[in-house]
Length: 106
Image (cartoon, rainbow, N blue to C red; front, side, top):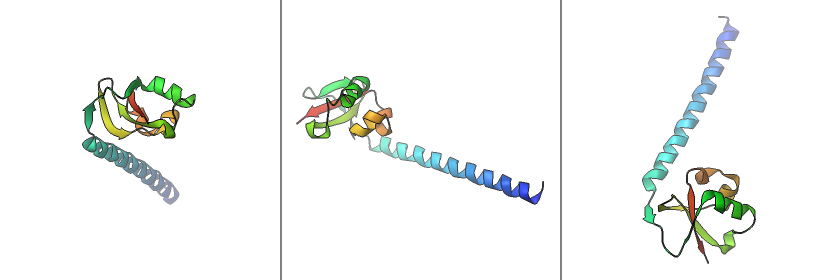
């Protein structure tokens, strides 16, 4: 290999190492979230709905931050993780991890 090829190979390996480090950091952050996750029964006073139905309502303007608040949930349990309507609308962040939402109107 020429010195230039070696430099290019080193640059590629450094970029790959950086990407692996970022992935590792993201995984560790998710593990930390799970360690702090508290799961509760779904209360009767909350509106339990699928993420798909909730997202459609958010996009249509049916839910706004001023209307109340929500927690991410599964089909049978509710988490202590707050719903962020922007994440639901864009399907990013925690919205990708849960199939349901429990919404509490003000």
